[in-house]
Length: 335
Image (tube, helix red, strand yellow):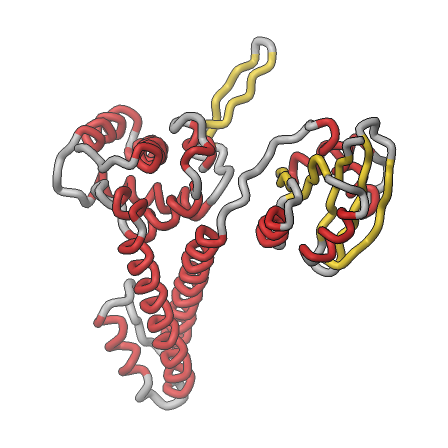
């Protein structure tokens, strides 16, 4: 008899429900949210044909570890699971969720989500940390500007030497110097940490053949190449390169029903960090890259016809398609 399991994972505990091929509940229990405890709970029911788990913060580590224990774990999108479970039960409880996931495992009514490798998550964590530090530095700069403006000191825009010079001058002003000196010390520490993460990303890009391939595209640098390679992780999981545009939310939203058919703005689904970096790379190609090549010429024609903003989005989408094809085929960019 085949058995199917549903795992409702939380930070402390996991509700496990096992059903047979006919959908009858075989067993249910609550265990600690560790791969060892979950695997032990499943062992008593014999070989599990398939176990379903939702996406979440702890899902990657638990799912990968369970696979090492020999459990056939399938990860599904939490939003899609929520819609399916909402139609299957009246009350929302963890045991009911586990039972619903077990039924999804049995019927196969789900869309599997790729669980990224630990190496991909490591790169993503560095990029995420860097982004938060940059945001903190920007907020700190604006705070210093506001404090100094109260004393009639205009620090100006940007963060260059002129900005830093005026900030140091403000330290000598009575009533202002103590506050600015403290904030400036924190800012210097933030800048050091950002530079350290930049060095880590550079080391990753140098050691990664995938990043070296992607950086052969003009306008694509260390962050964009590392973030894209980590987000894709396994190029073979995309059947067609053109689907990467939709994966990163760079395709227009469409609504069609009967005679009604309209196309809206881009969906903005998927990894927002990669989407932002692709947009910045597209802007760099359009406005900063001095060399002329076919991709840039095409984007400039789009900009002339539809405007620069739409040209950036269109170029970002095409960059995603090209970059995936490069990773899949292991080829350099051909201008």
